[in-house]
Image (tube, rainbow, N blue to C red):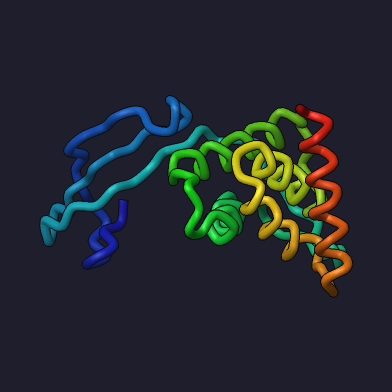
Length: 155
C-alpha cells in the first residue's frame, strides 16, 4: 500500500478489525520509510456498477458521491455519521443484489430519498430539492404537501 505522505510503496499492518458491520476490514498501517500511520479499508470485490446519468453518459458507481449528498442534506440535523454511512451501505448492497451492471441515476436518487424520509424529513426535503431540481416555490410546496399527506396516512 502506497504511503499517502511520502509515496513509499511498502507498509506494515499494525491493526486489523472488521468495520461497517463486517462489510469491510479496517487496517491501520505504518509506512516502512517515514513511519507515518494511515488507515485503509478493504471491501469485497463486487460486480462493477455503471451509473447511467440523465444525459445518458455512463460513469462508474461511486459510493462517496452518495455519502456526500447525504452529508449535505443532513447538515446541522441530528443524523449521526453512522446513520449516513448505513444508508450508503444499504443502497450499495441493494444495487449489488439487483445483479444489474447498469443502474440509472434516478433509481439511486429515489433510494436515497426513501431512506432519508425514514430518518429525517428535513434532510429528505433538502435532498429532494436538489435531486428533483425544484424550479420554484410551487414545486417545493407540492413536495411538502405530499410529505404531510404521507405522514397523516402513517398515523
